[in-house]
Length: 556
Image 1 (cartoon, rainbow, N blue to C red):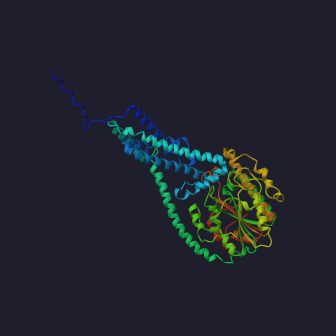
Image 2 (cartoon, rainbow, N blue to C red):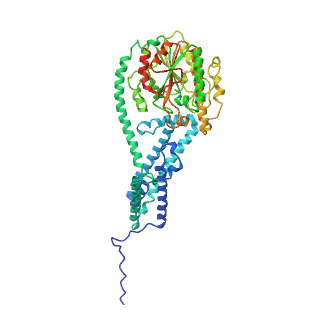
């Protein structure tokens, strides 16, 4: 008996569906989709300014999220792999840029510029380790690195686990089309009636702004090159001129940068009750010693830090508002004020208690002698990041420079750093005759709470900030009254402190004062628009870069 032949195997037609992924892998893909959405929602919604870091900022729907999810649902395995790499890279770049924005906005009140600011990462580490301590700074850095690595790893893994969805047929096209349609509808609604829905589409604009910022920075450097070339020609005309600065011939000229001494310290209602009486007391103390003063507001090129940009601006007469400009200036032949004084017969001296490492930039300024931290003879304990208190620095200026006889008149550039963050502990005055090698300050250096405790309370940060400013001004006034003799003092704040002290959108102005027993010299400055005394009264703010030529003219 003939057996019936078996039916032919079923062969799927071209229109038949491909096998669906196993349910377990499909469930994993759904979970991965939720993870991808959560990460991208956080990254895209994260503000780029610390003041905007509120829960409401994250309660928005970036339209890029459903649009990207729609593309990933349609992507097969090979395309999924490529998208996983690209989207993870973009996610990492955006997260890094926003974290960097938050940091630079908090410290310097401006956005992070990838073209200019990469070199500042090392400086940021120095500040963080000084304020928080080495161990705490290491742990913070490790936490940031682990956060970035974790987010990127999770993003890449989530996208790869969406690959099974790309092998589905049937409803995946409809789901993708639906997501894209919803995204387009929300975008159209938001474009026609802004603010009606909590939706955004800012990722492209944000990244584009960073590219634009970099292009603008490159153009700015080209413009600066031309300004520098013109400035070198003008500067060379003054260089070597022994007839410069005849108004102060034979006298020491002492340029004092007071750390973080800005307009807010003088006018902000939170700080004026401390600073106004101090400035009034200084005027009385200096007046009894025969000194007069004239002051005005000067706009610093920086805020919150990067003091060397202010030093470079003041001493070169060019606007040095970025590290790139500063680096270019250091390699130029534009003569600094220090060098002009040296050419005119002064000894150019730097008294820099904050310099603890090699300082190749000193070659640009043309100092005859440099007294860095290790050269100042301080044997006391440091005040956290602060190597020595200001009263000791002023005492060392006297013993190591001004008390030496015989000598040429000195043009001294010095920095008073007791008012540098973290503003703890706060130094206090001791008897000048008891200073010695500085060990008298040891008890002060080990007093008070560490920075981590102080910085946990913003009000305490502000209180101790103004206490350090008060100390620096008191020490300076006492020194001038005691040892000023016939010297001319140029006292200037380098920049405003960080926004935690000033608040957002504060002026960038700092006080600049000329102090001397030469009444005729003070009259010159008042005739040039300076106000009598140590407190500027006019609202106008002059760019710091303008002082270079003004001083050359007024001190002729």
